[in-house]
Amino acid sequence: MTLLCENRVAIVTGAARGVGREHALLLAKHGAKVVVNDLGAAVDGTGADVSLAQQVADEIIAAGGEAIVNGDDVGSFDGAKNMVDQAINTFGQLDILVNNAGILRDRMLVNMTEEEWDSVIHVHLKGTFAPTRHAAAYWRAKSKESDGPVYGRVINTSSTSGIYGNVGQTNYGAAKAAIAAFTVIAARELGRLGVTVNAISPSAYTRMTDYLREYTEEEIEARDPRWVSPTVVYLASEEAGDITGRVIQAGAGMVAVCEGWRRGAEVEAMDDPVALGPKIREMVAKVRKNVGMDGFELD
Ligand SMILES: NC(=O)c1ccc[n+]([C@@H]2O[C@H](COP(=O)([O-])OP(=O)(O)OC[C@H]3O[C@@H](n4cnc5c(N)ncnc54)[C@H](O)[C@@H]3O)[C@@H](O)[C@H]2O)c1
Image (cartoon, rainbow, N blue to C red):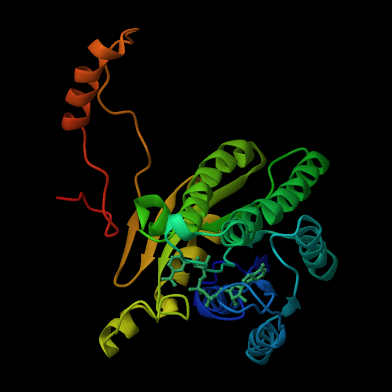
């Protein structure tokens, strides 16, 4: 078997269950030493229990791999630093960071509370920024020391909820769209260090999605997280060193590259809104429509 991440050191956040657990197991299978991070929260972000993360680490060790547990909150700046330091102090280096941890606090906008907004932004968006920020500082220092590029891979987790737009999730979708933007910008900043930054947009049957509707056995199998993780492991590999700033959908029967915002129709600037109005209407009618949750144009 070709090992894509042999002797690499990886952090996977939110790796106790669902998609993150599968990432951790597959990275380990491909030779990575893994820091299994998970606060052990309920789906709404409340509570804490590291025993599930310990089970994942035990599973990796039982299969002959190396793993440790970290129970920090990824949205805490100091907690994220502790997690990055723990990886480096235990395994001597950090090569791969998979930002996966997440929670849901769905609510229609008119009823959303400040706490529902803040908690989702904290775990997803700050929980992507904080670990990446500390990993990037480590890679920059390493690059200065060696006077050359380093091996660094960041794989973030976006969602169709953000990049395409899902009703009832202004908090979650805004965080996930921001993670896609963060990915593009961080890729541009860190490229010169040799670090790639990509994001996946998973589709999987987990506790985060199982309540949405009834799924058939076939649909559950097609949404098994094991269909998502191969994209992460490939993006973490040496071979994928030239892929950066991308958002890739994975799971539920497909892998698809998402295309980002781009400039559409345009007219010359005008200082009269009355004259500009019809021009804006002409342009809006001409350009491609926004897409629905399947990524295709709405009728
Ligand atoms: N399942 C899907 O179809 C789907 C779709 C789009 C995006 N996603 C994203 O994929 C990621 C994984 O989702 P999942 O479906 O596996 O959900 P999940 O609830 O099974 O797993 C999320 C994990 O994150 C952990 N976590 C929560 N807050 C944390 C914090 N502050 N610090 C550390 N860990 C924390 C939880 O304890 C949990 O184990 C999330 O970012 C989610 O938004 C999932």
